[in-house]
View 1 (cartoon, helix red, strand yellow):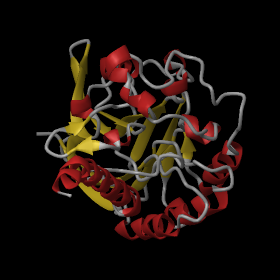
View 2 (cartoon, one colour):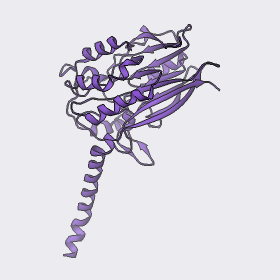
View 3 (tube, one colour):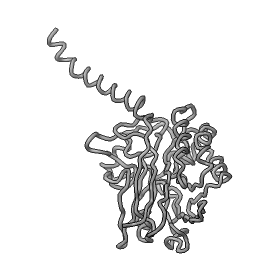
View 4 (spheres, one colour):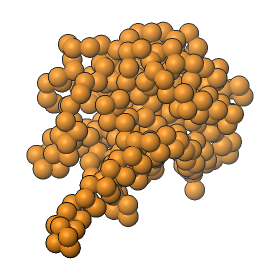
Length: 313
């Protein structure tokens, strides 16, 4: 009997611990929504602080009522404007619930770009393939044939039309502007998703709008070629998402992968990026959702971010 315990006790213990981790990652942490607050000194001297709510990677699936209520509650923060950095959907039937979740926020000024999951529905794949990027030097779907393309499309036009009707400014490979109630003008330069090579920087090159009070760069996936271009053009702040903060992280170590070619030290939160002798602030949101087929997070809770932009030092 003692030998049997020794023989089977350790494997059973490992299995039980693994099951407990999965249960926690799927049942608790993936629904433990949090708001992070970040200050970024990018405004001209004398300008009042500006509060920006960044949402990313909502990946709405029909029936996610806790997420829907939490997103609705964020309108109570009363930010000056909202920036949505894409991947709103993970279910072609999730559009009504997405728009219901964002309803109170759509009453505020906003700007948006799309990610690959706005255009294409996810399909069931082996999640271990994302871990192989560190071994093979590959980064998700970038530069490769996307197996989702030509399979199932998400109704992204419905999302675009609803955002546009609400007055949010779409900046997929284009520029746009918002004017706040006190007359402050915010200019946006945005790109469509680099993860599936929809970005067209030549269409928006040229740097910040000189006559705006503030110019921001917006993109879904923070690929280095995009960050280099924005930083070289002297944008003070770049906003991105896509990485899910690594999604499955190791406590006290951090993310294993980023699903793009940015380093794991900058997989989420505020950092900087330098190119052509100019340094830009970079904020990467860890997002508030997951692919519907991998609904787990570990040591990386879902989030939205309230960025308070202040005059530079």
